[in-house]
Image (cartoon, rainbow, N blue to C red; front, side, top):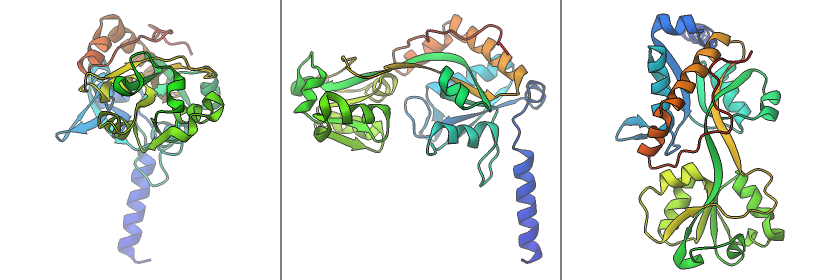
Amino acid sequence: MNMRVLASVTLSLSLVASSLFAAGLDDIKNKGVLSVSLYKDFPPYSYVADGKQTGIDVDIANALAAKLGVSSQIRLVGADENVEDDLRNNVWKGHYLGGGVTDLMLHMPVDNAFAEKVDKVKFIAPYQLEQVAFAFDTNKVGKQPTLANFMSDSIGVEIDTLSDVYLLEAMQGQISKNIRHFENLSKATTALKAGEIAGVMGPRGELEGLLAEHPDTIQIQSLVTPGLARSNWAMGIAVKADNEELVKAINESMAALVKDGTVKKIFEQYKVTYTPPAIAPEVTAKN
C-alpha cells in the first residue's frame, strides 16, 4: 500500500472514530447544532422537494432544535434491512462504511417490547399515533367497502410491510392473488390515482400526505381488519441510551411542542390528520 493511500485510510478511520459518539446536551449547545437522522424519500415526513429538505419530521426536528436554542443539521438516510439496523447505523454505533451517528432519529416506534430488544437506545417523546388505513376508489369498491371487496378487486401495498404480511394471510389467503406489490407507497398511490388498482393499505399519515391532492372518487378510512393484532402504534424519537441529559431535554421540548399545538399545526400544513399518542411525551424523563 503506498503512503498516499495509507494516509487517506488513516484519516478516514480517525474521522469515523471521532464521529461515532452522539454529542451530549452541553456539547450540542456549545457547538450550536442538533444532528438528526430522518428517512429519505419518505413523504410526507422527510423528503427533498425543489432541492430543499421538507416534511413533517423535518419541521419537527427544526422545532426541537429551536427549543434547545440551536440549529438543526438533518441527515436523510436510507432504510436498511430493519429498524434495528437503522438504529445501529445512525444512533448508537455508526455504519461500517463510515458517516458516524447523529444525536437523534425520528419516526421510531415507541413500544415496550421493541425497546427491550434494542437496549442501546431509548425510545422517547412520542408525538404521533400512526394507524393502518385504506385508500380506495369508490368507483371500483363503493363508498363503504369491506376487506372482502379485495377478494375480487386489486389492492396495493408496499412490499415487506405489516400491510403486506397481513393481506397475504387475510380472508384465508383469498386476497393474496389480488395484491399488487410496490417499492413504496408513493408508487402505490400513483397507481391508485391512475385507476390501475382499487385500493391501497398502509399507514394513514403516509396515505393522507401522498393523496393530499386526489380525485373526488378516492377516500381514506379505516376498515375492519380481522386478525390484525395491532392496527396503531406510537411514533417517537430514538436517542443513545446513555445520553440521559439529552433524553430529558428532548422529552421536555417535545412535551412543550405538543402542548402548545406546534406539532398539530405541522401535521395540518401537510394535510395529514394529527392523532396524539396515547402516551404523551414526559415533562421529565424517567431514567
